[in-house]
Image (cartoon, rainbow, N blue to C red; front, side, top):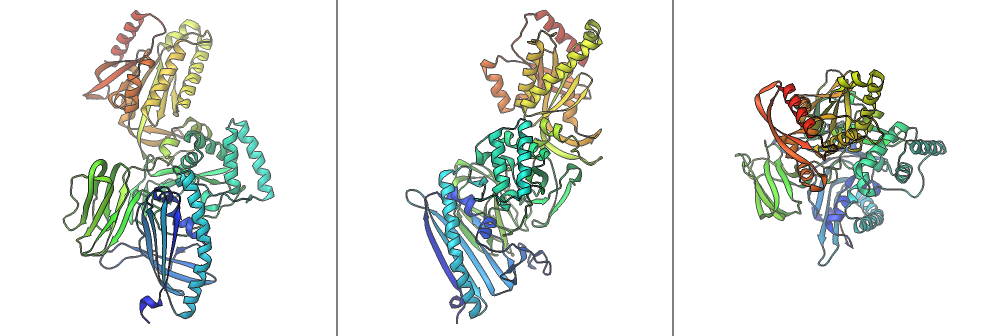
Length: 639
């Protein structure tokens, strides 16, 4: 009997309403698919080692095991291959169990007018007649489950194509014990007392009560918000409140820069170690707050215990930023069709240093050859069309795994840089800080420094008690303006404030609002002038006096801008001025903002001349002479 005759082969085909692009995030989630099919959880085969690697430095294969109907099986799994959103597949070679080999391939082809023709191909090589009969029986039961799963995917993708990547799986009945249900009622009341939106609270409680373990093992607030079609910040802040109320726990997922999967998930920033290793990619990397540290949530064990099992170790759903992955033998080539979004990409290959830069644009090439050889990658950027035909050529002596991936990180990740910049986070989790002496890059942050103009004179003129009350009230105004724009106060120094934002435009809006309120209070209080400076750039997160703080040259530059302010303007750096959203604000005549250039040196940066800008709002008073005097005072303080 030939090998082909010994194989069990099936091809199931279905016509679906949704198009391949909408179906892809659901159908390619092989972890959920395997669970829905009733397949067992998998684990690394400790006896064989986590991965194996051929002598010719071919891409590593994972060695896995599982228990099926009481029988232990183990196998070596080749890297998944796919071309989004048209096809994916995998090959498993078994070292133990009733099968010798398994090959799965899924194809999604657009139909002529609309919809998708989906084909599921299954080929197994059993070890003997009995194993063959068992495989046929298993396929019979799997097909029924497969059709139910596919029908559910099609309904969701056809009705909500923009949010299927964040789909939440809910059961029809509660999964909570009576004790946990009673606790949930107390938490509902607690969240209501905290001012949380009642409708969002009910949605979150429903997910905790009825969501499956795969959904709850790693709740991502931005993805959840997209699925619910509500503001992301509202869901993130709800999850933070829910953590304080005892409904959720948060973790800091440390993400590999290549596969972008979590390598560790400490429950506190104090346990975040900057130096990490990804065993899957076999690389060492340094974490940073703006890319490789993401906050995720799961239910508190007192409400619901969640078992985080792995049903598939690979697949497109594990690395959604990878749009094409192909395993090509030495000296061979393969041509695939892909559908790409506009933007920048990179192509890398196993065992080859560096990467090839690519950009997808309307005028890009419809066909391209991507070649791995001993010469290395070309230095130029290749432009591709959105639906190119790509030919992958392996001109090396070993097998190559070609990986084409988006360089932009997913914006559905609530990064540590964003979360720690929220005032609510600092209020609720003031104890969350790095280990003393630890330093972690934050990436791009916008820093604001403010101070009251002539505060010393204020104390002399109206007395210490009244002046102190005015200063405290000014902190309240600043805090509200900063928090409303998604920033946070890092610390206060006398009458001065240091605040952080993730983007420049919200920082400038907060400053201008606070200046306007303080200059023309509605309560009849004494007007106050708020000096302010705004700068944006990379900085370092540290722990200072038990709180999360920031330092670096960009922090120092931001601190030097505030003394240049008159109290009737905000001094911003060129980096802030050139931000597209800030430029849009300044060009909007309805805001009544004017911009004046200012070139000067800054203390500690004497060798540099800085391009700065004064942003002036609509004046509440006509005292032009006072404004001119204030500018002269500001210039004198700097020099």
